[in-house]
Image 1 (cartoon, rainbow, N blue to C red):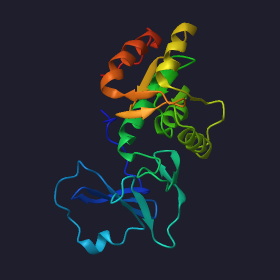
Image 2 (image 1 turned 90 degrees about the horizontal axis):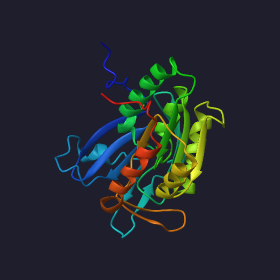
Image 3 (image 1 turned 120 degrees about the vertical axis):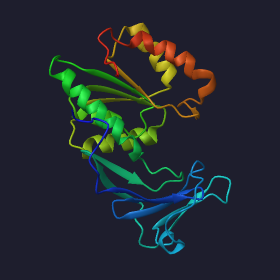
Image 4 (image 1 turned 90 degrees about the vertical axis):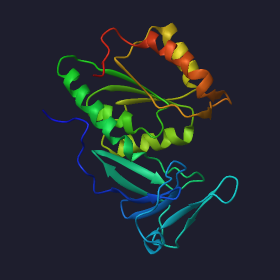
Length: 237
């Protein structure tokens, strides 16, 4: 039996080393050094290899900032699975993709293709959709996707990723909104989805300043999304 949790190695991403609170990664031809507080072990590569990074995120200031080599690009593309991501050096340490989630995108793609062979429509709701890795994976597998995020900036990147990956503009519906308010409206409208994806942050703000605190609001949201989940839902096993 095929192991759907094993994906093919991609040439555009490589974790080169990690340790001492940082990760050294290659995205396409660009090497990045970024902080990661969970990486507590000792690094494997010598410091000379870490010094080859094209961009280093420095957190010595309150907000932190990127330090780039003169010829380092501020935007570029990489391909993970069949998804083309448009990456950008911004004011944050994140660049627009979490490649470790590719195993989830692969699983979603396979299970949607299986469901699609038996049904005309497979509707997927992606809450806190970020730059659309899961949304594009589902769209490429044939699902009708609704992607919700509170940030216009990441919605813009998600649209670019949809277009770069060869999907039509009507394959994914993008909504810039507070997730909780959107789900409440979907309940009133009676809309249902066979699959709901959520990757909520610990803290965030909606487009109108709405505060999201995961420890306070996730239980409420989970109870609400049950009401927009179809009886014919896709169940994990």
